[in-house]
Image (cartoon, rainbow, N blue to C red; front, side, top):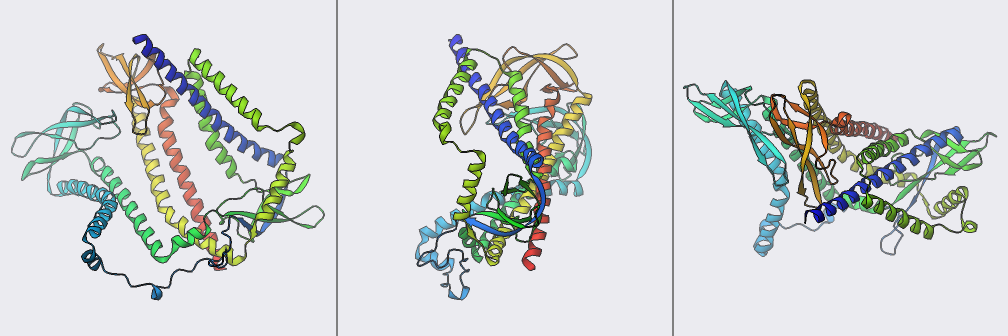
Length: 535
């Protein structure tokens, strides 16, 4: 039975390892193609100054007998022509059951964000009241209680002893746990705030310890409520109908530049998007023209390099990790052989005979001709109408982007700070993977966490479960691993993966900084586009 279980586990592990390898190659391929295209464009293209003279659109809803002009925006309904709405009381008297269900539905929609705001405000207010009107004393951490969640994660809550103003010894359990590690070491001293009228009502730690998480709750709940309120106002003003009128449209700018002979050349773009804000007529920009095809024009923005790196670098890191941890066996080789054979068979069916293939130049020319024939030129008023709708939508997304960016940067800084403290004051040892804990996920599948045994500096044995898990086990049972642990709290330990220890804080902070840069770019673009609308 054990032999069958080991074989099945090896087969699943091989499938996951090959899957990680394939994902890495796909990411690297996408990023590599984007970066290679940018380099090719700058090396072979002729750099010229040009501007956008017009915009063509595809996917416009065709004109019907009853709908009027296709490109016309449906005007918001005139409030004077709307039928008078009945009050909720009148509707409830007509149909009490429907009214009850409506109230229940509305309550469920607002329950989550209101609960976030309420819990956050009450928790923060409770601490602030104790800090302002209560008594502060010093306590000592007796132990950290472990509490396991439904997903198998461990949270640590400090149990602190202190004496009140009457000399009575008391204990209080912390109500805050951060990132599945103890907030305070056993035996350490910590501040305690308690109510003199009710000393059992006590909280431990500083303001940052007690208010940070409630502030996040309040911020997230407030953001959700703001988004819901903003969406309801958009519905009332008819913005959703305006947005629906342009959904599915793709916009292609038409560039104009002066060639070497001094003649003006107009060329449609080879690429388009559903965003019209960067395609406003009159915008001056740098163009790259293919020497053998004056109609082949592209902008070659440096943002493409950044976009390519966002795919290539994670793919390269994942490929390195996959290859360094891959155990080549009969299962891995069999899966690789199947994927290569299946891919070659599919590719053979797709590839046309040599005499029927198009060259790259012929393909781009055909696509350009098809778009030019299918696209509809937009008037300046058409562009303004679409831009107003998109500006309204992008403006509502700004607060969400900024809050998400700040949370990501703060999370990365917090995790990085804790890791830096552990690396500077921690000890290293050699350990062995005792077993792999598997935690089932709600979406299916399992996440595997390595449970490691190691010998502490005092000679005692210590066991811990690594905080990093994945659908493909990163370590095997019996594998020797490096361990980084806190001598004051040996249960606080991680598998020492060298530079990979910084993958999570670097990823969080990097993603947050990118979102901040994106927010700044969107804001600067909004300023330019509003100036264009006002011109």
